[in-house]
Length: 114
Length: 115
Image 1: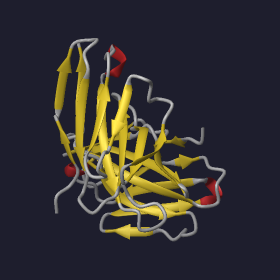
Image 2 (image 1 turned 90 degrees about the vertical axis):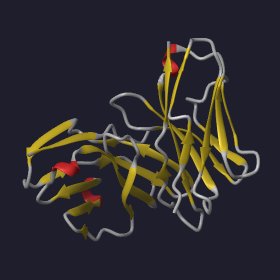
Image 3 (image 1 turned 180 degrees about the vertical axis):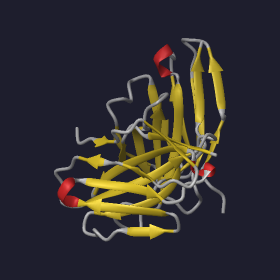
Image 4 (image 1 turned 90 degrees about the horizontal axis):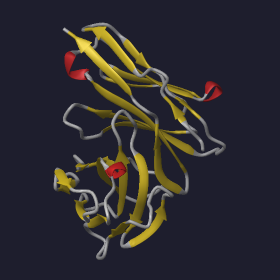
């Protein structure tokens, strides 16, 4: 199976620190899509970002930024100046062109302490 | 903008009973997905519909599981003769099919507990 690996099971930082969540994926496809989702304690998965394999530009959205590197098959997520409300489980996922299912990593539980 | 709606939020039942969950997708979305999530794990794909057609089923979906989307709108997921191992959160998601792979938007899930 072509896996998605989130090696960090849990991360705990103090508010206002920067934090990076790692994601490494496996794929034999040339066209694929990568996603990040946030799952707060309430349980609903919230879509954060989608990238396709042809777009390696890094993206910034407010305090969130994503670093996509095909050479290392990584799609890392950085939160700058973290806040308590960022506490959640974050999932990285991939999909391939022609197959709709998402393959998720195991998630990283992020705790931001005040 | 109404999101994906799932009913019930929680279901507790005895082993061996049948259960049925309902999912109402975002109205303009024609793709609908079911996933299962166990504690400490990421969601695992179960099945997917485009309109009323069930286009893909995971090997996780045993004979005891059946999903339908009869009119291409809401969907139901039924589990027959429930087992302890069926205890999980069942997530529904929907997406449009404009082109390529669109983001899937998830509901709050149905948490199933088997006694």
